[in-house]
Image (cartoon, rainbow, N blue to C red; front, side, top):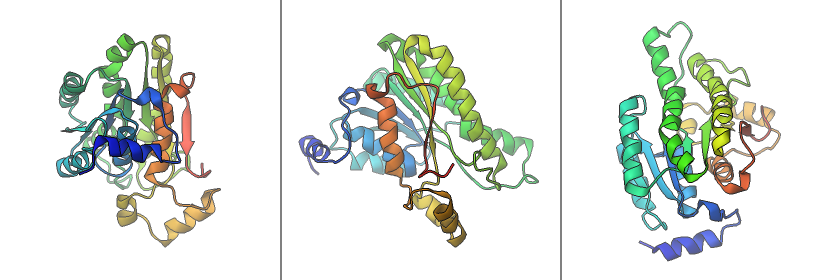
Length: 266
């Protein structure tokens, strides 16, 4: 295993931005074990932040934390079902006790499971809201006092261009992701006086392993080629690098915004 000094050296040779304000800052990432979330964990750890992340996939979370153990601060993984708000609150308290008050919250966790209008029941509807947007509010609620005490902070809520494109095949997910915009704007207004910034980070179709395995086909590739202005695959690291900017002091006057990273599709 390489040393923290070697990890710092690798970051120093990166062609991408370094954000000194993120060094030693406590960053909490939900849904961080795989996909876009794992890229968030990797990128914030590379900046020297104190990273904690939640996921229900314990094996993937533990493996990721192990791989990043040579970071300046080894990431802290906690298994947590974010639809259980009491469990979420306890996990956030555990993070605070272990690595300090939370200065950045990345509300990433979601599930874009496909479903038809006819198949939606009151129970599945509530479950979709719980996994895609409800936890974002309660995670934000739980870290506000930390950010107030610190004189400010950054909350980044993950949205989606799916509702902007009028995508079909998962109506509760699309509705949930459109609600993120309203959540962001409402929180930004109430928290602005405390120098707490709240923004939506809105990805396009990010080609994670899950997306390639479950949803990407020839029709999808054609839609990407026709829809995006930039003819290239959108990768998790493209989203993570924008999250770094939104979390860092460099974006200190940016709040209540929807920052779209989609290759120009929406």
